[in-house]
Length: 377
Image (cartoon, rainbow, N blue to C red; front, side, top):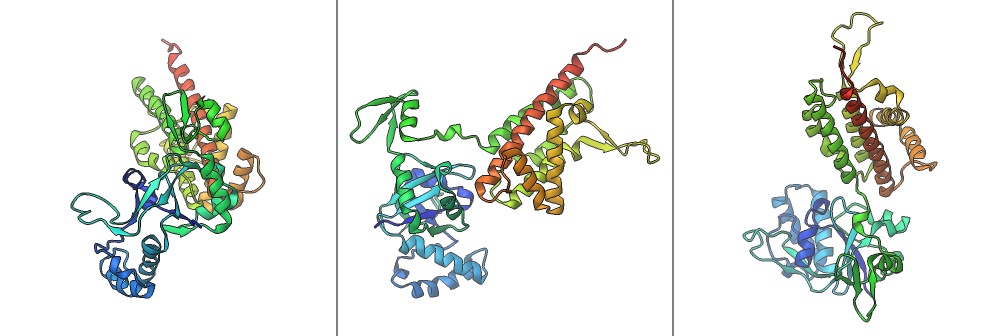
């Protein structure tokens, strides 16, 4: 009976495309030697690889070496022909490649000279369609999100995984609007009929955080340019945008990711859109001058709510007040508990980013209106 393994295709799935196109999974750990002769016995494998890792691997501590040996053994030996591999399709992807193991271990010689990756390989026949994380049960999501390069998915999930795979039948797209099913089906369906019949969601229709963030960035760039054209002190500075934007586009998979996201958002909207009042002399004078218009900051209900959310998130990342993130999660997603699994962090991030997008659209409108007003002579 086939077993199911989750295998990462490089750190943060950076080799997902190469592995899929090349039909393989693999590993390296800076071991440049064929391991075939070491696979006869696990203890023999461990005793020979340990000194190699300690000598060559950049993370050369005992715990890392032991972990690498375990993961290499699974990839090279434990996984059998006919077993099923499930791998994330990319760092920000919400879908997984699925494939069947077709070969024993082999070593890709001259891989470095040819500019290739992951020389310790198994041949994989990847299925044409991916499976979507949104369709996983909560228990499977928790299991598949465990850290590690490779691990066996519990047999408890075999039926569910098989159902997901069967639901994503092999297909070929004959044109933009038609999908022809392969393997005994003669009917040609529209894409909508096909998706409805087989409960398949187009991966491109699932919005990712970085896609929303890119739209927000376009609004912000327009605001910067508009301020320049009208000789107004810019609300956002281009240096701050370049420095901070990468953190906004990254997908939140953990509490620490969400903390970084919250901190970056606060800096961009609050810290970088104010400066200390040069005329500050006593307590009655404002300490800060805010570059965001008063209509955005205090008057418009939607943008005021967005500022409130940002302030609450600040309490979370500065003081580690987990109750605050629970409050935000409950308010925006309508649930009583805070984020528990990876999907929860991503949903919350997307909700906040959509608020950000709406707020920047409103800010752009406010600024355009301000500049369009005739100036007093």
